[in-house]
Image (cartoon, rainbow, N blue to C red; front, side, top):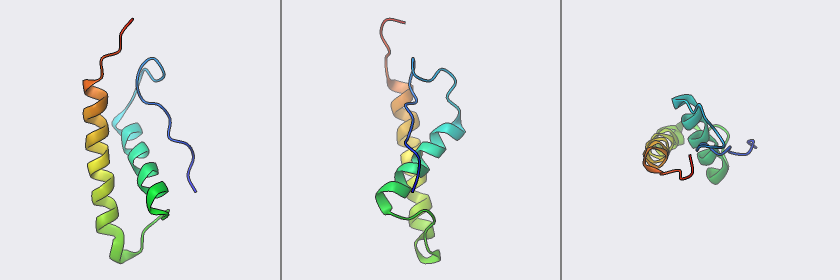
Length: 69
């Protein structure tokens, strides 16, 4: 259905873009919903979930403290 979500924090990923975070959120929602693309009647809920997970992911990555660097 979708490829594995890659780790987005240093030292595993040095140059994480907004597009990387969005792609990970989309992969997550696809995986848990079982839909690659939702039907029209579910599209708004699907996109809202991707938006929320994208924000939460960005917040998490921004708050992590990587020691030893």
